[in-house]
View (cartoon, rainbow, N blue to C red):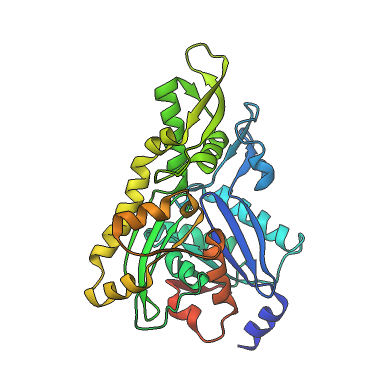
Length: 347
């Protein structure tokens, strides 16, 4: 106990939202100190890291053949363990100004549908980063805490955390998840659908960044009061030459209808499995939305139309999960141990 207290005194305990699209880091006593893309640029032949995070994003789609910009996270889980470990170490060193912290506690939010192998990859990455104790907390629980929901009461709190790689839906009561759904559909699938639509409808290829910009600028899940247009630049498949075209928000809505429907079906499926006593609470309180993809234009209106349940957007959807794991890090009532799905101390 004394040794643990000494380590805690000198270390900077951290909470991490290791997302498919974005990694956020919360440091105890300092709040959110890092919010950067989960991207790494490296040399193909030597795997040497050239850039991480925001700097790597500027290279996306613009690198020469010997350099590749990759996402080491896919569908909310680690796809490339070695690169993820290097990315984590880079972010941790950046947070601590390249000083190595003295064996911190690290709390990480993970999708609720991950396998044991995927859990092991996450905790091994944290161990390699120098953690003395690792906690894994399911993302919907972390998002609910970050949104300020009263998870310890005997009434239902329903949250839908829609991120880049996964959609996590859960009904929470008395510090536990009563029922939940985890689907590997999120903002990335919407961007992919937009790219595919332009390819099949206009014979135009666009990059990942362009598809994301289109989604954020004019993407919608429900008809808008005033439909939007955007000018898109890409490469014509037939001629191989650059081409500019104009597309509308109606077209984008049609392009992304399948992944949007999958997300909504996941939410409706969780509602259908909710015990009747808790369903009444959800009708009164509504569903809380979190995650960056929940900001898609018209999504709340579409979900309200489909379910008939009130829909409320959390105060800061993008940071809900990291705020939640950060609150657990600061809590001294034992809540972290109560909600963690994995806990291990390293010596």
